[in-house]
Length: 220
Image (cartoon, rainbow, N blue to C red; front, top):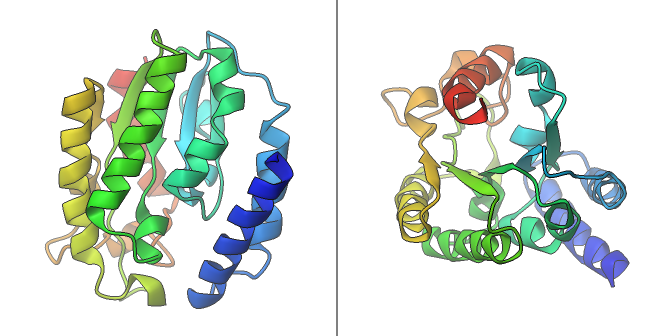
């Protein structure tokens, strides 16, 4: 069943990758990384970073100098993907889980409200299985199509803004910590600050340092 899930999600991501001029092997990478995560143990002392390529692309354990931080991000993932691969994480009942997702859903035409509903489903699932785990919901980051055109994100900036408002309401409703990263990365035009990215979507090193500093009070 898990192999079928990985195939279905990978196929969806592959279609999205082609539409956005991403590498065609995104689906292969997703399946490989998701498969590995099934066998990497999580413990009650661990802090899990769960998300998409923004999370995948960072070495949080090194930035925080904390060996208990475990990166569970995968390039191209969607909120439903997080839900469907959460089981190995829940089995370990980690100390904390940081969630950042949604922009790939935006690129697939998903509405702000649907992203929020799926995220709330994920949070409820975590709370049911790991009631002692502290959950931190992070806002979606802006993107910048002036740096590089992501076709499926064209004219979708407002969905991110509306999605973050809906996610903040989810955090309040579920009594989890809301971390609004968006203002730290957006410029006056409502786009990802160009000096923090080389492709309009993903972060350069300086961007990850900003992210790290924003999370320091919650990680420690």
